[in-house]
Image (tube, rainbow over the protein chains, first blue to last red):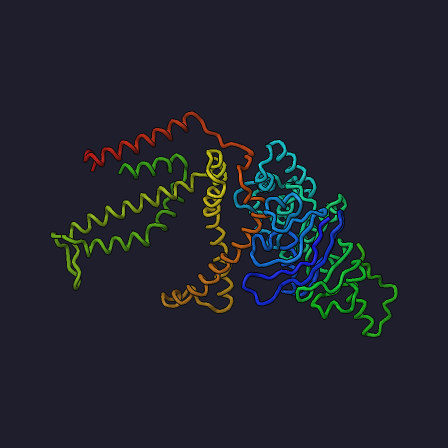
Amino acid sequence: MLTLEGVTYRYPGAAGPALRGIDLQLADGEVVGLVGAGEAGKSTLCLVAGGLAPRSVGGTLTGRLLIDGQDMTGRPIHDLVSHVAICFQNPATQLSQVADTVYEEVAFGALNLGLEGREVAARTSAALRALDIQTLAERNPAQLSGGQMQLVAVAGLLAMRPRHLVLDEPTAQLDPEGKRLVAKALRRLAGEGMCFLVAEHDTDLLAAICGRVVVVDQGALVLAGPAAEVLADSRLEAWGVDSPAPIRMRRALQSAGVDPAGIEADIGP
Amino acid sequence: MLAGLAVGVPAIVGQVVRPLLKATLLLSLPIGVSALLVNIFFFPGGREVIFSLGPVTATVEGVQFALEILLRILVISGAVTLFYLGTRPAELVVDLERRGVSPRVSFVTHATASAVPQIAQRALTIIDAQRARGLDTQGGLASRVRGIVPIVGPVILGSIAEVEERSMALEARAFTRPGRRSLLWHPPDSAAQRLLRWGLVVALALLIVARTAGWAP
């Protein structure tokens, strides 16, 4: 279980905190969506949950990052990677640039951990299988589509065997096919017991994969609950978040005086 | 001559003569042309005048020295280009690490080489975007010069912005962990290759000695 306890974080040189008093728990096997307007604090929350802020980014943090009850605040990032890993929105910047093949790219993190070659090979193959991208193993990672690259980036993290994965807008730069690939992979991994925090603007995607959704606004957590309830909340728009398409459609029908009965807004996982 | 052979023969064997020539000329021409002009017209102590152009005079000694400098520039950029054309970056990184070089050093070596085509691709995208907004990049010299800033600025700033995310992505994959990394494979290193490498080291030492002792020009 990953827990953020009373987290307040301020970037170096910033006038005010980017996060204020965040309390959040992610249970094993849970997929939690994180929504909010631009600059609301989603990416910062991801950096803190992933252990990169303040350790790598700088700034000041009060509160604690706990994993299975152990305080991880201030631990070196390489100590954290077996517990929690973070994936960013631009797939191209996550490639190591030192791998000629997808296989080597996926193995990169496990090799950094200094594991035995046999163990690295086992983990790499397992990560490729988990995301169903074994067929890409011999391809040049720089020549993949955005969606495939993002899957390779996630596989590279999986090879380090973290139990928690933080994804900061993983589909922001992907085409519909890329989004479909990533969503399918996340659903599969969640089914195997991994825990995800997914910051995302695409609420349709979150509706499809998340059991719970939290909303941040101006650095504070303003709403949390089951995905179906949160994504149907009428205040979402005021927080700069679009509701999923079925809900928007239902509202549009209602405002046009059309009875939406029979149109199911199926936003559950 | 000898240095030219040292670059030319491996380029022929490696079948990279055309790309080598193209890249070498592109790399050397800006500095080569300025070195030529400066040395032809401003060589101190030149006596045999070829022609005068206002306040400057071209001399035979200046031309000889300028050609010598140009040759050196061509050989240096040729050798560097040949190295990048003939070396698989991944093999270089693995081999450096195998020999105990820090992964950070080998990473920088590789990432620098692989960043060049990415920056070139980014520049092409930005050129297209600026053209779409009316920037003239194909007109006369003046308009081309005016077009440099709106292209170079975004290229550099965009590359810098990516650096932070790249470094965080590397940290997230334990790249900063102290201690040695494991290696998946070792590049092949035959006895002939080892012999050739040592032969080159010996040849270099001999050349330095010959040059220092005045046996070679």
